[in-house]
Image (cartoon, rainbow, N blue to C red; front, side):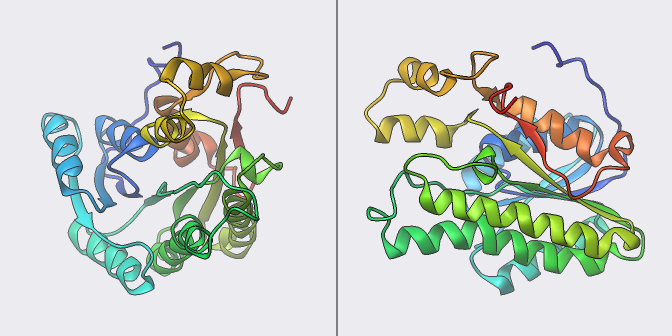
Length: 259
């Protein structure tokens, strides 16, 4: 990969990543730990977490897992509290957990709508609300994974577009509210990313992997989908001192699709 040699140093930085056991969250966790950070990943799959932790046992930083149901405000608060107790504080949060349903408004069930909002929007808000007061003494960075679907409409993604658009606007508002506290809040908007979630969408639509990736790349000037590792590199950049004057404005990884 062309940018695989990019190096960041996050030694002694304390990081919480939701959705950290798969896809973009996993890739981001790996990148932070390899850059020396101490990381807590959260999710609901202990087996996947164990696999990731074993893979990184000889890395520069440390990694551990805390299970949490992010649909619960109490569990989000407890997750942030436990992370701070375990790491001795909190410097960086990455809200990466997400779900998606391919459905028009007529096809979207109440359960799908509520699940999308709970995971994509509410959990992001709950985690931010819990993290911000703990970051105020020393500052920090919150990275919210939104989507290019927050920037324009997409076919058959009514609930997803609504949730990610809300994440983007929420991030902008919070960035203004907490800039004077030296807390940066940066929304990142990837296009299609080759993750287990995207591959699951292909299966749901009856597409094999090659066909799904080809269709997803149609119209993208760079003629491919983004990799999870490329999203991770953007997250680390956004959390680094190189991006210390960036807050509130979306960073877009869409291969030129909206150029």
